[in-house]
Length: 549
Image 1 (cartoon, rainbow, N blue to C red):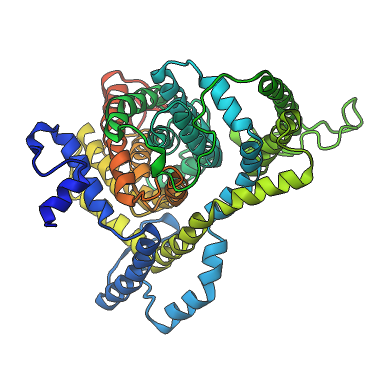
Image 2 (cartoon, helix red, strand yellow):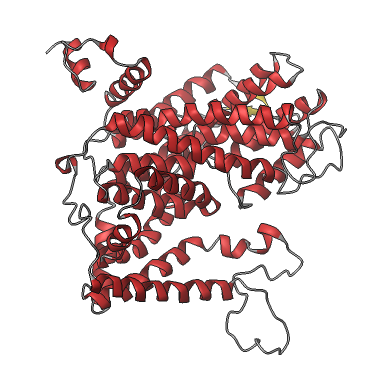
């Protein structure tokens, strides 16, 4: 079979069919998918990436690649490449191979959370709840709800990645729709809409602190509070939801076509059953719902205000234990212990209602059934654990080498060289942030390196740090769904293979690429209109210009 025949086969068409009949964008996505799927298995690919970093770091170090460190605390120092092929590099690899794996944050987060989700799934609670919720719901409304829930869930990002994305695939499959469309809609909301929300999350104080430090290079004493982008984030929530719904309904789902259960890597059981919920199942759902309310009330009590002394409620054990004991803390800082406890709370939230439901309907009787459900959830994550081992090495090697920071600084310097002094400067700035995000998966790591360059530079031409940070967050979020450097990319790829056993990185990227393009264009337009046409502040107390006024 010739190359042309292989190409047409990969495009799900025949050589005789004219490509000119297909929309240009669809042909482009098909080409991206075909090209990406020529790559080896994702596990092999991450292993090759890790090996590539070792080789490139040695070459770059030999060439003397270095740049000046832009961070305020390191002024005058140079960022250099650390070769992984030297004695020190090889010793670092051998001593940290296990630590890189066990210290990879998504690994523990995912496995622990799935202990709870596995109980709810094995008991039948999730399947029954999905059928009860979406049976008869309009097709587009389900998509809209999934994307919107994804955007809101990024306040506690682990919940979105670990719970919502797999649940969205189950929802779409139960409705006879393509599970990968559910994955795409939820992933777009959780990760592509990372900087859109109705609430202030844990990342906001982190970014604000970095922005403040960079702003003080120009204006000593300048303050940036965590809510400086809140107004723009709220507006962005509805924009991202609308764009995510449109792309899912009009581009992604039609392109995926009909789903065949034969594509699955395992028996999907009764997940395709969308029949009426039985009386026994309804009884189980009611009791599970009541138990969930009890759990929520317990969480609320644990996050309630601490009451010192011997007051009426002082006898309650743990009252306020998940709230910052510093009563002067406000906003997200007041609930930092709660936000850092999301994963164990997910376990409790699913185990308790899951077991209650199982007892009512007869699928669970004792602790042995709970243990079996947890073990089954762990067995399903075998591929993910293998993938994470190599992905963790790649990310750790990349960070140790310093290549990511140097590439970020070089990209920033290229933008500075454009010498723009009007609002148009934000267009290449956002694109540069998109590019950096493909290499550095951590929002704080990216901003720590680039903020000391861009915040002072854009302040000197008249723009406030608050507006600069809002623009950065657009670029940081838009490419989250197409970069393997995003920590949870491997998890989503591994879970999605349950429904499509031969799923490759090319299919994943081609499926998510329309969201990146749509979010980037729509979000940038909203930013320009919001800030420079309507003159609206991006957050409370956030000026547009520097100096203010």
